[in-house]
Image (cartoon, rainbow, N blue to C red; front, side, top):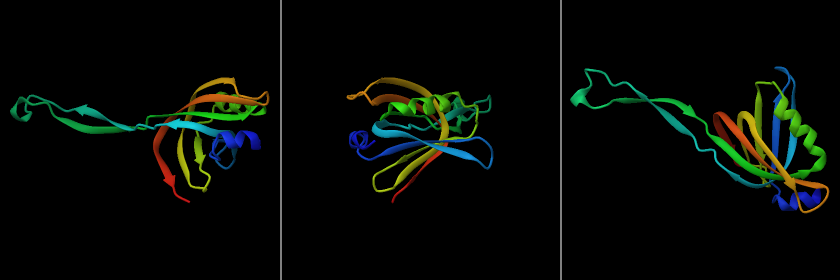
Length: 143
């Protein structure tokens, strides 16, 4: 996979799927080409009532929406079966790990919610576009 690694600037994407509480499988998806997100937001809860001061609407902060990570990766064509397995997995415990060249990483829970493919520059490679729905808050660790 050395030829593919140079296209992804040595940043690797892994997805972990827990089959049981004690067992999980880490799958290296491929080398990251581009990434965007997540764009977390907080929902507004309208608590306005007839006693609201100055007849003004009142709001409280609600739950955090983790947003979505959109990324593109190149990977060996043989990895497509593993990616399909992640998409069809019924496990409720999944996580993504984006590991940088210096071993720093970005990690969050969620699930793969989009996957599209196109041929890469060589016959052994595939370029895929992915969507990852974030659950909870992501973490980042510097090397």
